[in-house]
Length: 186
Image (tube, rainbow, N blue to C red; front, side, top):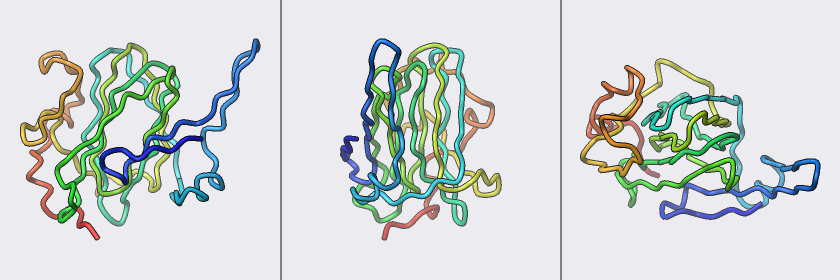
């Protein structure tokens, strides 16, 4: 299992080994012991699975506040996504900055997005399935969002604005500057 720190070092790109033969393949996609030896100590409580039929489906930008802060380990089992994490920890040296990676069934990478970050993704292939582990269960009262195309973030989404497929909730999410006190860097 390879672990790579992105430009925001708390966000990790994890590539599990994948071993194939004429029958197919085997991959150990999560191993708490091996990752703990690398300093990764997240404990997961729930797995989520999303399906998006169309290219340009955007899910995000989302987070959850205390006491239900979520870290997410995201992987794609079918298709591909452009996945983004935005640092919203007030006082962080990378506050307001973002990192992104393409995650796909082909490259077999996973991205770790810790608590204190907005998370979102855009499908770049049709019929994409995403599975992600989370460190806290869904809590509607703690859920927050920022509009996907906020000019303050200037995210280079791989879809034209008029072609993005959004939920009603994501379409009307507030601007980035609404998150002033959601998280504090320590």
